[in-house]
Structures are given as structure tokens and as C-alpha cells.
Length: 558
Ligand code: SAH
Image (tube, rainbow, N blue to C red):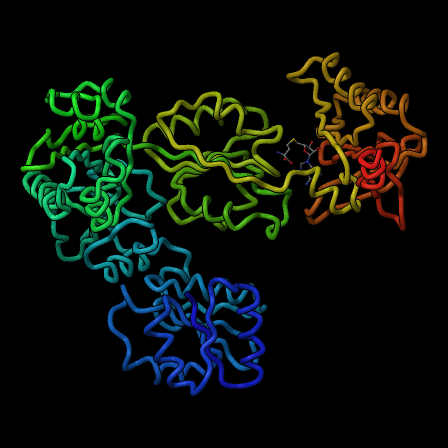
């Protein structure tokens, strides 16, 4: 919950805007400001104070405890010009909140924590448990001092700008080690703990068994990805509570699935009770990996520990049509999550400034699509975090399909949708896609022309709005006139046609014309062409395809 505190009328107005925008995330604290700040500090994860920074500093100073647990505090000035991340920039999420509040109120976010101000990875923002001297190592990274990466666990980390050796170290491990001086330990979720228990096994016993197993094997509980057990034990209170206390999810598997897993220590008891000769070992091993602690028992419980194989991560990211503000926040986050970026050079140029320092960029020229797809998948298979980028939506006539055709289930794949050219053009033209519509690529490089023409004819006969991608290039000039002629066989010469070139890019242009009057020479590969259906009209210079509600109502009334 975000506590909102204000003192003046202007502050209250800005406060109310936030409260209205985020009704479920915010709570307004009224009354005397000092009391309100104290109450919100105790009750909320974050505070937004519409007060001077000086006033807030004085009020929160006696309340501050620890940067890991204190709420994040953001101040917005009386004029609503700045959203200042005051305390709890990373741990309390105040930096992110300052950006969000800034975006909502039109205020400039002010972030002063060093790693954010130069766009470096804050070591405590990677989403992994982190131990050791985060401040010193972050400062060393920032100052460009040599920092060594000691990766004992392969894990798809974002780019960390580290050197081969140095007096500072970033260690990635699941061993139970104390960070040395000038060292930070990152703990990726590498361990799966399989658990079995008789009915009524106490949580304390389950937990003690797990902790003992980890301790003897020299492993850290902070690297546990999840506890795993058989479906029949999904509600077993001791197991559920153990997972809760460890702060990890409980994953359950059907007994048939577990029965098929080969384990070193099967036994008859669970076979009779839940239908698999192994619960702990099998549920730890079901996703593959190395058995570090074979089954061990207490009076009522069993457990086993597996180090799962590193799974690389492939993000297929659509960059939108060109303009930076049509790139989604999620796409931006994925670009910063990656350590390897694969893409066409012209698209890489579009987003280079968003990458973390140290990101490896594998760019290539036009064509070479399959090679790019293969490279991206190969890099992910090595356990890396890869972003494969494409303009518009990466799944539309782009890299997602060749990449996923190569990828197996040994990597994680994340797709980030982007604004595809047809939508970007539609918004410029008006509302051409208000009823059923298709996209057709006129490139016959990989598709025989007969197939393309058959699809154009089908769209023509079905009276569907059509957007042509790849409409015309220097070597391919007869396809567009031919396709338009097919549509003209079923639509009036006055049917509106929108031509949009470089949508949302600096030299954007658009024209509204008709089927009879379109001059194909004005169309090139930077263009999409949208042809209306028989109901589409040009209204006040805009292309409008009616939604056909009235027609639907008549049909339903019949
Ligand atoms: N994945 C892309 C499409 C790739 S095919 C997307 O979703 O938009 C390439 C074709 O897309 C170009 O020939 C052109 O027809 C169209 N295109 C891509 N970006 C465009 C833009 N900004 N303006 C107009 N057309 C565009």
C-alpha cells in the first residue's frame, strides 16, 4: 500500500489524482501531517508526501531503521514539478515509484542513487537475494574499478560490467558461504527440494530436516527455487508451512509423473500410500538436474535436494514501429534484463542507449534471419539471458517464428508484444480496422505468388479490410498493382486506401486515397497500405470502417 500525505490545497489536488489513478494501491492519510507521516510509515510499504523534502526528512528521520525494511519515500513539491526519491531508492522501491509518480503527474523524477543515475545494474535490483558489501561493490562497478565475476552457478543474469579479476568480486553461488570483504554474493534459485511427509508431520520437523540436509551439503536455503512434492500432499500442513516459512512456492506433481522418474532410493511405503516409489527424490529430480542430497528421513518426513540445470532465457521483444514512446515499458525492462542482444543492426541502433553497459550485442545486416534466430537460441542454451529484437511486433513477419522453431523446451521463452505497423498506421489514418481485417505480406521471397494471390482473393470475396506489409520494393513492383486489381474486382473504385510510410518515425508521412487513384510508385518497403472494405468511408479526411453494430442488432432482432 502507498500512503499519501499532503498539507496544502495544491498538494491535496495532486494527491487526489494519484488516489484516483491507483485506487487499490493507495491510502490517503489526513489530519496533522506529522501524525499522518508516522502512521503511514508504520503501515505502508511506500509513502508519497506532497511536502518539502526538508519537512519530510525531519519527520521520517527518527523512524528510519534499515534500508532493507524501511518504506520507500517519495516527495512531490508544491508546484508538482519534481518527484524526488528520498529514501529507500532500491529496497523500498522509491526510485521506481518516483518514475511512476512522475509519469502520472507530469513531474520530473529525481533519482540520486548512483547506480540508477548512470543506468548501471544496481546489484540489489536483480531480483536475486544478495549478500555482502553491496554499496562498496556497486560503487566500484560505477567507478570503473576492476570487479571480478566468480560464477559458480550458471544463471541467465543481466549484463554485469565486470572484469576478469579485481580487488572486488561478484560471486554467483548456491554454496553456504559468507561474503568476503569487498565481495557480493548473488544467489540464483538453483535448488529444488523434494519433500515427502506422513499425514500430520509438523512443520518444524520438515523444516529441520531440510535445513539439516542443506547444512551438511554446504548449501544455502536462500537459493531454493521451490519445494516439490506429490499432488496428494498439496494440502499437507507441515509441508505448506515449511514452504511459507522459507518464502518459496510449493510445486506439486502427479504421482504417475513421479513414478516415471528414475531415483537411487525407491521404497514400497510411498508406493502403497500415494502411488509412486519415490516422493522426495522424484519430485526434486522431475525437472532434471544433479542430486546433491539423496533422500534422508526424519520420523515423519523425507527430503532430497537437487541442483537444477541452468535454463537460459530468450526474450522475443517487439520494439514497436519506431518512436521511443511506442516502445512498451515491458520491452524496455527485457532489454535491460538481457546480457546478450541479437538483432538487425538498424533496430539495435534504435535502442542501444537502453542497454546496460556490458551487454553483448550480436547485430547483423538485412537477410540472415535464420542465422540470427539460431544465434539467439544457441546463446540462450548456454544459460544466458538473451533478447531477440524485431520492429513492430517480433511475432509478425519477424523473428519469433524462426527462433521458436529452433528452440526446445530446455530454455525459457518470454514474448513481449509490440505495436505492429498495421496498428501504428491505423491510428494515423483514423479507424480503418474497426471491423474484421487481415494482414497480407506481398513479399514472394518465401511464399509463392499463387498462394499470396489466393489469400488476397479470399479477403476480397469476404469483404475484409486488408493491410499489405512488404508492399513494394525496387525489384518487386508488379505485386501491389496486381493485388489491388483483385480487390477492385469486389470493391468500388472509390474505396478508401490509406498509405502510411515510416509510421511514428521522424519522416512519417501518410496519404488517404482510393483504389482507383492510388499511385503504386508512392509506395515502398517502408510503407503499409490499408484498403477499406465496402463500408469504409473517408470522413473529414480520416479513414473510418464502421463497426457494423446496427447490422448486428437487426440480425439479432430477426
Ligand atoms: N514485425 C514488423 C513487420 C516486419 S515486415 C511489424 O510488426 O510491424 C516489414 C514491413 O513492415 C515493411 O515492409 C512495411 O510494410 C512494414 N512496416 C514496418 N514498420 C513500419 C513503419 N514504421 N511504418 C510503415 N510500415 C512499416
